[in-house]
Image (cartoon, rainbow, N blue to C red):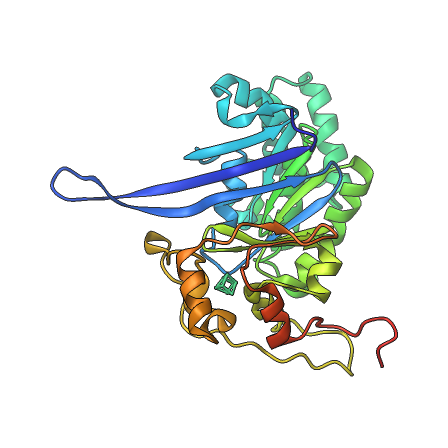
Length: 345
Ligand code: SF4
C-alpha cells in the first residue's frame, strides 16, 4: 500500500520507430526510462530539464493520456496502470491537466461557457442549471467575468485563455493537477499573474501540483520540491531551497549555473557543457550524462566507471536524492554551495 498521495515507480514510456518493408519496430525512443518519485497531498513538485528530456511525457503518462510501457502509478491506493478504460475515466475526476498552449487546447468552435462545462457533462455532474452556476463561479474564481461565458477563445488574450484552461481543469474538482509548461507560452508579465493564480487556487482548494517546466526561476518560485530529468531519468530530486542552494548532480549544477542569484556579492561560475544532448534512441551506456560530464571527463578511471555503471538515485540526507558516483569529487571541482551560507561574509 502506498503511503504517499501519488507514488510513481520505475515508470517507462518507450515509443517505437517503425522501419523496413514490414514496418516493424526497428528502434525505441526511451522518452521515460525508469522514473520514480512521490508527491504528498497539497505540495508542488517541479519537474525540470532541457526540452526532449521526457518531463512532459512523464506528466502525460502518469495521467495515462499516453499508455505507459512499464512501471506503476499509485494514486489513492490504486495502480492507475492496471485500471481499465471505464475505471480510468472515473479516476480522471481526481486528476486533470493544464496544457502549455491554451489556444490549441481550447476548442475554437465552442463558447467559453461550454468549454468549461464540458467535463461536467462528460462525467454526468449536476443539472444544466447547476452546471451553468458552476461555470460562472469558476470564471470568477480564475479572475474572469460571467459575460465571458458566451464568447469564443479567439476573443481572449493568452493569459485569459490560460485562465479558461485552468477553470476547465477545475470544473470537476480534481485533487491532482499536472501542469505542463503552463506559463511558457505567455509574456513574462502575464506569467507571474498565472503563477499567483495557481498558488492561490492551491491554497484555497488544497490542490497537489506536478509542475512541468524548463524555466528554472519559475519552478523555484512555485515548487516545494524539484526533480531534475536528463534523457528520460531523474538525476536529482530535493526540496527546492536545498536544490537551488546546494545542487549535487553535475547536470543540475550546470543547469543552475545559468540562473541568476539575487545577491550582488555572489557570482557563480557558469558551467558550459560540451556537446549536445544525445538521442534518446541511443542513450549512452552507464550514466547517460557521462559524455558531457566535466566530473567524469576529468579522470580516465571515472569515465570508465560512469560509462559502465548506471548510478542509482541515492538518499544523501535531508530529502535530497542524487544519481551520481562522484558527488564528493563534484563538490571538490565546483564548490559546495551556489549561495552564501549563514555566517559566510
Ligand atoms: Fe558525471 Fe559520472 Fe556522476 Fe554521471 S555518475 S554525473 S557521469 S560523475
